[in-house]
Length: 104
Image 1 (cartoon, rainbow, N blue to C red):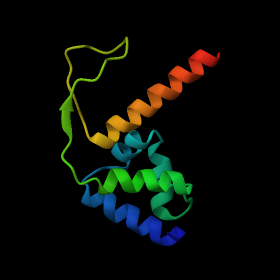
Image 2 (image 1 turned 60 degrees about the horizontal axis):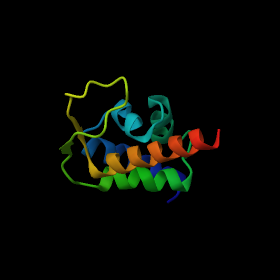
Image 3 (image 1 turned 120 degrees about the vertical axis):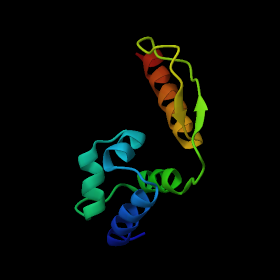
Image 4 (image 1 turned 90 degrees about the horizontal axis):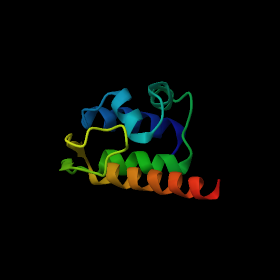
């Protein structure tokens, strides 16, 4: 996907998914300014990040209501609505954090 076409696609797909730049940024673990720069074509994410963006925006599935194991600071009674892709991202993140803690 070329730079300009990714920027145009991203803006259209994000709006179609009814997400704000901030909401998409949160799902991607980046800042809203980063999403803004991608949409304007000022920056282009690496191909691996573009694939993740496409996976999230093209998932097309309704989010599930799940209760993931809470972090120590979270209220255990709160249910969070996460899509399967968001759950996958969280699991990968937790695994990476766990691996970095073990190597430290």
